Image (cartoon, rainbow, N blue to C red; front, side, top):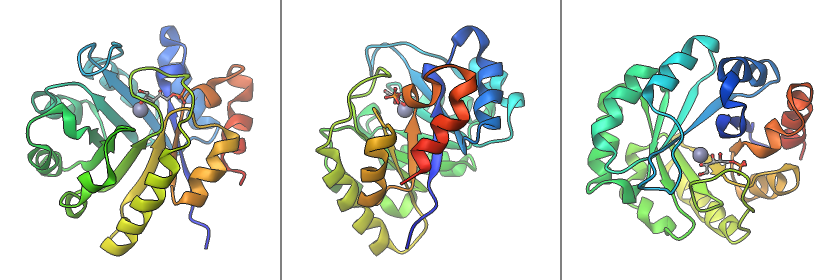
Length: 220
Ligand code: DX5
Ligand code: ZN
């Protein structure tokens, strides 16, 4: 039975000089979620945006803000991103000493809690976390930059996590992030993903193309 697939537009590929307008454009073009990549130049080699930018964008759309935190140590910033308007806060197990505590903290803030696995991080990391999370994000590139090549080997991990989620028997989103395009989107969905992050493949060609770009990711 086909699952509905949510498209999370990563604004890392948007025009940073016109971010509000870009968020409104991908909202109108049919994106389900807005994916915000938060990078600190320490956990990952790139620097992107902080809570002030998330807060400034909040009035531009009613769509959920899917906030991917690539910052370390992460715990001290959870409150700020929650207050800025995040709906889901997703953290890497490597970004702090106590991933379970970080996820508990996010739930205590009343937000959806996500955990994200780097390409080298095994699915087994989730064994004692699934009971706490609303979303699992599988990185199909090493985090830090948009426009990288999709790592096919992660499809096996997506399938393994799909089985774990089905066994857990509660609603947990399974999202994929990195190098997702219209071709590999189908394979991600077949492996069990139900949410796809896309930056390059959504923003390619400018605003006139956003709706078709998003529709192409859904067509399986
Ligand atoms: C990479 C980010 C991704 C990135 C995806 O560290 O987590 O969300 O923006 O961009 P594309 O779709 O261009 O790979
Ligand atoms: Zn991301």
